[in-house]
Length: 246
Ligand code: SF4
Image 1 (tube, rainbow, N blue to C red):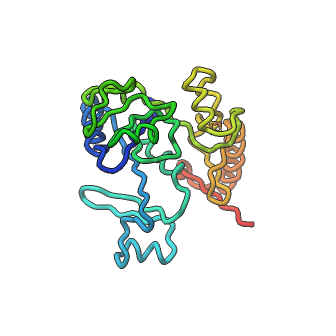
Image 2 (cartoon, rainbow, N blue to C red):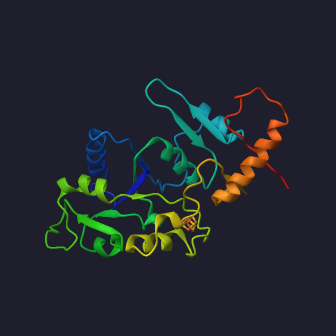
Image 3 (cartoon, rainbow, N blue to C red):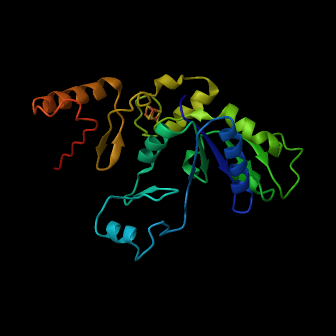
């Protein structure tokens, strides 16, 4: 299945972690694989702690540092603007991605967790499908949703990802605009030309440039044709990277 996205928003203390834990339990019990992507706003945040090997390798210039441990492993990107790369990785692995606190993707369906009444204006947007609070009574609010029903709503309403390249090739000014029209039923998901290209990626100055299927095939065929002339052992090629410096 296409990886689907859903967003949980709300200030600290609103119960996001507890809710997301419940959503994960619900979805995994049904056999789905789940990823949570959490935005960290603290400057300097990182799991490669200064003085430890991972930080030393990063400071020396490594772009990626990976650690492998018996119970969990990880990849640390020492670069900016890697979000679309991370999405590409997780989309190969999971059925659902729960976003926590990623503000500029507010076109993804979301549930807002509310601490106080003023939060309603701050967090509700066109794609808010529900509000809940464990601090104030919201039962009369038109978007109020019972806590126990939220995981089922996530399963039902989460939407397939679009690559967020803002390339305008769909005719809309941004992915957010495209997505809003998709939710209204004005445009089909297939109009996003970058969605079906998951085997060829072009980065210019580290920015992922959207390729349509034709351009992706063209690049792929040219490169594979060149490499075939090198007469490398059959089946030895699984991944090709080309870097061009100006
Ligand atoms: S074609 Fe896809 S990636 Fe490009 S702007 Fe439209 S929705 Fe975004």
